[in-house]
Length: 174
Image (cartoon, rainbow, N blue to C red; front, top):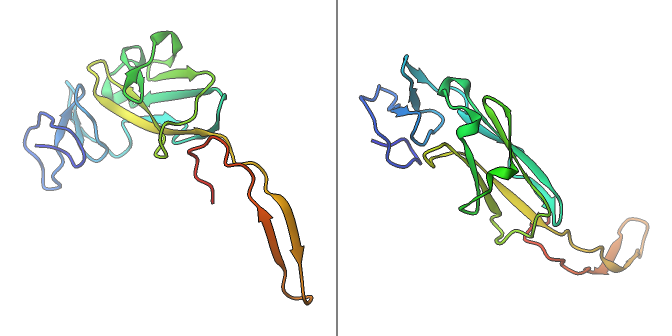
C-alpha cells in the first residue's frame, strides 16, 4: 500500500483515514504514519524540513541550507546526505548542527538548468527522500532603457521603454 504521492512502502493495516504506517527507513509523507520500535505515531507535522524552502538566488552567490528531521524518527543527522539534481554532494560540504539538523553549504552557484529550478534533496542513509527544495539561480534582468512618459491631460499617463538585457536567468519575473 502507498501513501498519496509516495513510492511503495511496507505497510500494515490502514485505519479509517487510510493512514499507512511507514517505517523510518522508507520515504515519509506528512499525513501518513511512522512506525518506531515503541509505537505507531500519527504525523501531524512535517517529519523533515529543508530551510530555506525554494529560494531565489543570484548567480555566484552562496547558500547554506539545513535539513531538520523530527526527533521521533530516531534518525541522526550524521546519517543523512544531500543531492543536487540527483548527484550526491560531497560530505565535506556538510555540517552537523545538532542531532536532528544537517546543513550543506554551496558556494558560487551556477544558473539553474531549467525554469523549474534545481532540486536540492535531503535523504536518509538508505537514499530515501526526506525533504526537498527547488533552487532558482540566475541573474535579474537589466534595467529598462529609453524610458519616456507623456500625458495629453493631467489624468492619463503613457510610458514606453525598451527592455534591458534578459541576463542569464531561468528566474521568472512578473
